[in-house]
Image (cartoon, rainbow, N blue to C red):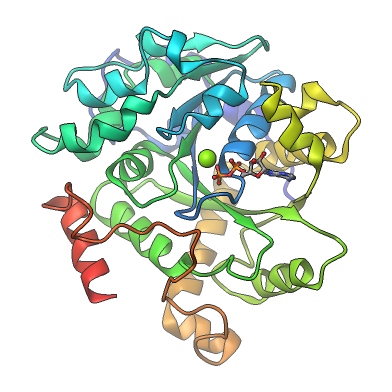
Length: 355
Ligand SMILES: Nc1ncnc2c1ncn2[C@@H]1O[C@H](COP(=O)(O)OP(=O)(O)O)[C@@H](O)[C@H]1O
Ligand SMILES: [Mg+2]
């Protein structure tokens, strides 16, 4: 693993000198690393996106960094997992996403844990996509809402909903990096092609600075063959082998319990292996510098080319087909996705039509 030039992520002086409203995507990538904006993604549900956003964020904050968690899932599990009841809130990400001039700053509230803030979600967010249909620049709504918020944080982690929706595209559009969570489960790799294609579309058409930096295996069960098999496949697949985090999060009931108790597992039970795993992941994530992330992204892009895949695996490998019939997966089609009318959303529709 590469050594961590901590100063890279502490470009505060640079950040504070930014104008209040930046034109979108005019950031100098070096400066942008002053605040890493990470989208926690996978269009499958129940793979550990929210759990990772909460616990990675909490562990990074515990290490002394300033962290903002953005809950961009109408289910509001991240919000509730931090002991906040969305019903009690005056403002939420719904207001940010549906107001054409909405700003993120007024929505942010501190959590009980030092260095850890949250922009909470609300069930109303489920209607946001429909309300955003006539909105100008709807795919960049979140990017425009950021304002100077990134200058106040070292990390912003965006918890996405389990679909390749307009909200998820908004998250990709303003992120500097993408993490994919993968449950150690037989269907783990299904849908990966679609997710990569949307990532490629967004990085080609909207956010050229977007880098693919990590795949995290969660809910790994050391006793089962299938868990080991999934990791073996991820290590063999050129799309994932170079970006796999060394840290693997094992199944741990304390993690599920901690969410019920409304707190990060690292504070709920400091000694459990889930807490150790998320602390180790935080160290691994913080140790990546821009150069390392770019290298990882290049490896993924090379792996995405058919030639790259064939060179390593001799064609489309078993279990890596693009069809996605997992019952856990919610890939929106043109029929069900009202926003798919232009821009990347249109390209996404064409893609899903063709698939
Ligand atoms: N490592 C783990 N061990 C045990 N339970 C877990 C673990 N990671 C997540 N869970 C539980 O699995 C469920 C789904 O996780 P979640 O993070 O909400 O997935 P997603 O956000 O991808 O839908 C939750 O009930 C969560 O508490
Ligand atoms: Mg979730």
